[in-house]
Length: 469
Image (cartoon, rainbow, N blue to C red):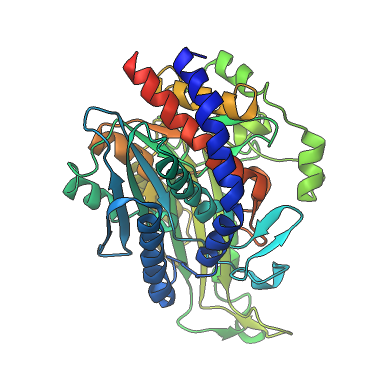
């Protein structure tokens, strides 16, 4: 640690920690207020709630002391922006987050209402708690503490969007239209996870995404299965066979060309990846499964981070109500996501999937494929000043050096930040893989929430010092 870093750590950090401790109840109450709003971007009926959440986020930014706060309309959901420029000669950090959340279904699997936050066993349970309201809110509160104590060391810009969960479809145009306003040295994101609360980590890569919906149509109406069963194609049966054809017995995706552009990961990197703490028995026990599954030749850590995948996210058709109804459905549907790795192109993969899936269909049915959204994979360098600042910040905060790890999820905007703004992204998340994001009973640890607020000021400090040297 440099003399400047040591001085900051010994003088300002105790004050920042004291500020967090003094205001921690208010911070939590404010977060709970945000979590109560059902900002579900995927469902049009929640549009008023999404808009209301954007206004609330803007109000929190203004209250924290951020300048030039504005809610920008887009063809979809609003983008919230604010900035605080200390000195143009200082480095500028652009903080990114998203206020939209996943649908909470199935509701019956929640212990408490997804939009009535509850604190249990040191966690806050609510949809969006970890993904991403709790995590972006840390940045607002960290800024508040730094500004109140005169501890700001960088220029700060903040952009919080409302379409991440549906592919950030309108953010590319927003970035291009506001390129000068958003100009920065680095993008800082907290929308990823730690290995464990006592094993800090930094995400160095994300998978891309291709998400599609498929429709299989047979007869022109639902039919009586006793009268017509065995005589015409059942779209549900056909869809099941088509889906089963998408993987071979080694767990590999069978789409021709699917793996052609997969960038190989070195033996050394794979070895380092598998040195991260991981208990396979505990993993299975936590999920209530007997054994893991996936592509042959790879560990669970590799399968969920550096390998592409194809999964059915939902499947339906015919009668699914209570009791029995002997119907042969006219249509059957499925939603399918493909997680992609460097250098797979989402649009190319979608075309390959569409051509192959249609080719699997017998002439007794008609098939349509509807692309929903895309996202490019991203890998961030670990030898940059931007990454080093995060490494130093987490080392100071947690008392041990963070482990670099590839993430299995997707944040579509990361690659666009580099393409449009020319800025690399640092992914410094504080959630846990066990936080049930996208699932019932999503949660976020209070330890993680407050630890994030404490660590973020250290990032700004170290980044400013590294840029000086």
